[in-house]
Length: 444
Image (cartoon, rainbow, N blue to C red; front, side, top):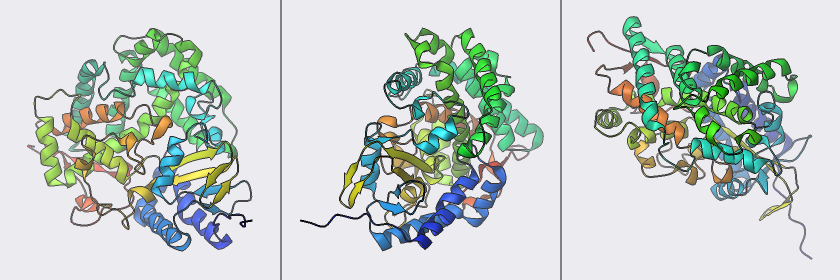
């Protein structure tokens, strides 16, 4: 009889080093909402590049199969091989559920009945709600024409602010971005409702601590009541109006699902700011982007600017830790993983693995032209498989519209501190969006 196969397991020292060098810095930056001070420190210390090198050393030591981390609570495996990433993501939710214990603990702070953390038969209708409202399989949402005017008006307001200040930074862009988000999701009647997005930001701040802090049930209920009041208006031209026309939408608990949209649009704003910085730092890409922005193409059909957004997500993934959990025993070449094993996919490792990717640290948006980011594992800008992000087309569409307006405004934004993204050198592993600034030179 053949001896039982044993999964490779890190030593206690290496497990501690993995926690200290990969898991802890990622948690410190904020899993559910970014912590600004920690993100700034992470860029100064280049923690993501260090983490990628640590993952490469683990692969060199243990091989490419899944690797167990010594964990006194439950089995935890990290993936080191692209084929395994593809298998795990394609196996959702039957074998590898996205509703991991950690994710359920975190997201329950503001969306306990969301599809992402639902197990069992209720998951399918909740997921179908997202796919239908966001038109997840369509590159261009049917409301894109209506949203063009919203994007142009709000982006022009951002540029007007730049004209009065001489430069703009995260706060100005973020405020304009979320005015767009509120109008797209709920209609113009919600444009000024900053309290709604402030409420979910406070809930997400608690969610960063997952199990460690109690749920603020009063604030969570108030957020959902406020969101429901906007949803009830079903303002024409908004996603709320789409939801109002969807058969059986009420059974999916719409505010529980839509809370995730507001969560996801926050990192989408970060990716938009990073994409703008990357374009401004790369003259050839900038010329191509401006040409597209100034063309007569529909504002919803901007393939190069969409590709720039996706490339920004490859270089600086806004979901660095992709979590899955086994629902049953799963067989691998290395052995058997028991049900309940946590699976961790560290996206920066697969996105910036310069031992395997010749252009790992270069801005190359052209690589994403005519390529669906949800069908490209191990690149994970929007995850992949049955649990791929349902906004994988909607977010790049809206972001590209914003970028086009910023770049084709007739004014010339320039990146302050351009040495942070010097195209003559490998791009840094971490880029803090909160400290990026864009100047509008006099007369530009």
